[in-house]
Length: 267
Ligand SMILES: [Zn+2]
Image (cartoon, rainbow, N blue to C red; front, side, top):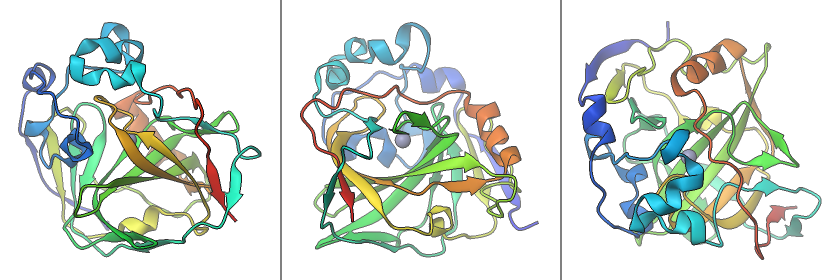
């Protein structure tokens, strides 16, 4: 077995996680995506019911962009309408990292060690964490994929770029995304992974992408996020996907209006 659970600890109760009050912060890097522990996570929103996505914008003044923003994510990417452009290559300078998987009540987030970077043109972003949504948040020509991985990056000056990778079930796939380690099943649970791995294992072979100006897909739905959505999905065995779905159910925000934004695609 390649990945062995070293230990599992429950660091916060569900009620602690769900009832913290929110401080109004609008800088992208103030988002909970940059929290390293479930303790810091703020959660009084959800994916269903009266705190669900259609109400996020009125749950808290700092969430208002969720309903009033004109650059919200995710979106349906219409490949034929995307503007073919000379775009910089995405250079994934990811390295093998030791990982901790955290269930923060909304997703399973993997925090690695510092030292992995995404380079786009003259911008150098550090990889902060990656996490998953089931099913996918972005759709491609109306098609929703089984899962979407978000790799969250930031520059030293606080610019944020997220790389989205579509994942679909594939019986023949050899990738073993956390097939053999115990996923953190309950909010507040953290699993330290004994073996290190390279996050680039979860990138598709093709580096072609769509890009647009968007937002985080969770409250406060902060804008000025540069999105890179990889064109090619990766495949994982259905039994891996089933494990994520069993824990996360549905944690996808519905697609948002594109308004006057232009989606570009690499040639
Ligand atoms: Zn996400």
